Image (tube, rainbow, N blue to C red; front, side):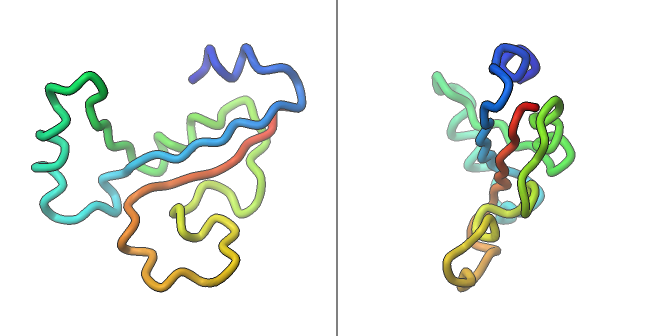
Length: 92
């Protein structure tokens, strides 16, 4: 991510959504195992790790949050059904 952010011109936006084990269901290990031998394995990261993706950018409101809470038009019915974080950063 550091190489990507460094290569972005000033004023560019970085948009990230990422699955997390922080919010995942108890059987998430089975899901991760299913992807372990695929061309694109599933890597779960915690909030602090996802926040580090935005180093070198100014994170827009509401910050790095659970995906259903990022500027919803209507309040989500159950934020616990989505186990991912997302955010937008702007490179100064």
